[in-house]
Amino acid sequence: MAEIPVEKKSSLAWLWVLLGLLLAALILWWIFSGDNDEVGNEAITTEEGVVVPGPAAGEEIVYAQQTPLTAETVEEANQRALERLRNDPEATPRVFFAFDSAELTSGAQAVLDAMIETRADAASEGITLVGFADRVGPRPYNLELSEQRAEQVRQYLAGQGIGADQIDVEAEGETPPLVETGDGVREPLNRRVRVELADSE
Image 1 (cartoon, one colour):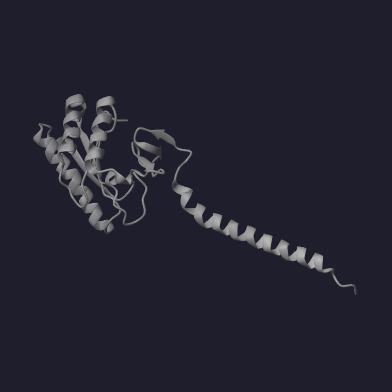
Image 2 (cartoon, rainbow, N blue to C red; image 1 turned 180 degrees about the horizontal axis):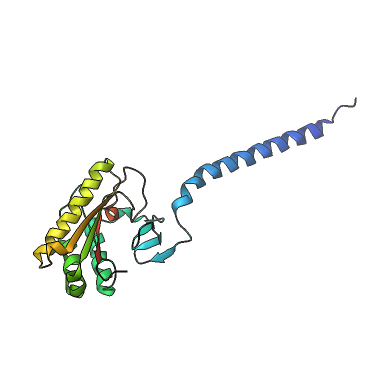
């Protein structure tokens, strides 16, 4: 049997090296591209970020972009909610809370005041307050905290002349989030109360 010339042995070795490099590159690509599934590049961009339809009526999920919304402070979130409400009085009002707190900030109060001013008739016909929490802490605790937040909003609205018996309170805890995060991540936009007015669709 004739031996394979040295040149052919050498070219086969290079072929195996090349295949090995391609395989390694493919594995690295698979590892590092796996975290991009939730970026939502095909979603619609709005003034609130990148959104997709959420699992609850009137709610949406915001997916983090290259510059995530998680850096936003609670007061910035409330200020943006106020501007959104002033630009579109029919928008769903939301107020945001500090970490592990149910206390209404001055920014949150300003959002509620603007809602009462622009939609007094709808507010007098009935309101549902839906409280939420971020994913830090145990789920039962976050469910209770989300209810406390909604209750704080109820008390504030009652103090502004809206009948307490016209206001329903619901607690949703951690889900659905406004911003999708991993477990244990602090996210100001998920610590909120959504205000559903009687004339909301």
